[in-house]
Length: 149
Image (cartoon, rainbow, N blue to C red; front, top):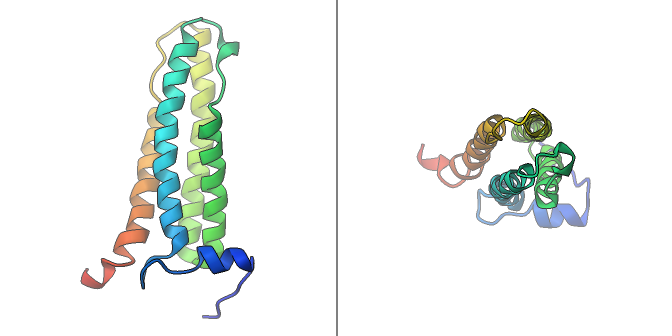
């Protein structure tokens, strides 16, 4: 297969190898998924403290969580240019993470408006764990451990 360099210097960094099997972009995506899970926990704590006021308009998105969502989607789109199959699956999962977070935020606002207990973002946690499992699989089992499986 012909290797294309669509982004020039970006390809020189992100498409390079950490080891013989692991690309830099795979490690970056794995880090972004872990950061996204941590940012979701921070955002949920912030939503709990904002919900104590009882005003749904006081709920706001956590900027770090928004950043990790956008970076995860953009990183997965870049990974799509490097490895088409793994990149497509990663991009679809990253879009699901973003969409789930959007709907979970709106459901937190509804919970505050209806004055019921604010629940943890269960669907977003689930899809984030799927993203973590797939990106870890691509990074580790498809890469350095794949020769032993």
